[in-house]
Image 1: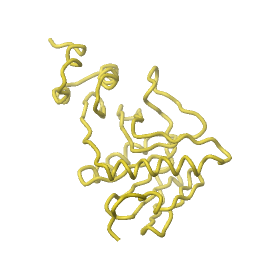
Image 2 (image 1 turned 90 degrees about the vertical axis):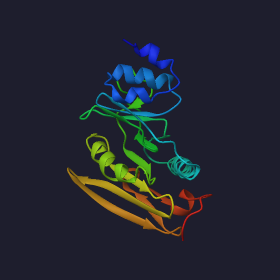
Image 3 (image 1 turned 180 degrees about the vertical axis):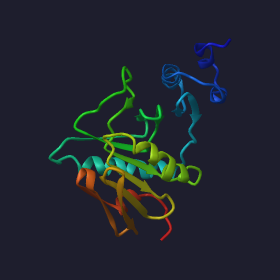
Image 4 (image 1 turned 45 degrees about the vertical axis):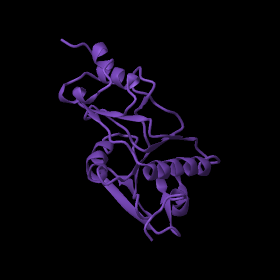
Length: 205
């Protein structure tokens, strides 16, 4: 029988996906992999590669959130898309496009790459993942106690939607449309202009 160590030597990772793995196996695979893989209760799923526009939008958000939160009364930490988030109820490990944590990072067990206390999560929408980001991922993230706000960002047009948790099982949506508009992120008491989010990105008017 092929061991996990032997499997890691293979350049192709697709064969992982029809098997069932432990969390320990998954984290070992991730530590050696050049690609990102999600873990869904024993199943390892390869993530699609992001296009330049997607990556630029995510980078803009991370940069401008970091700048805007520099002088905030609380310490907020802005993390990139290399950060995995653990969803204990489903035993899932997921990759958002950006994450904001309040005051200190809480890590999953002995891992140095998986956080358990996201406050704000950002997903940049792609045609192949939009439905999953809007519905599936959001439903999973909602199970994390610290999670309070979800920011969805369109790629092809300047449109952003925030969902903020106002009470248990209750979320309030706020939309911003157009490069001259801005979005207020209540969880971190911060406003970001859409022209900053989409800087350098060709979008539809």
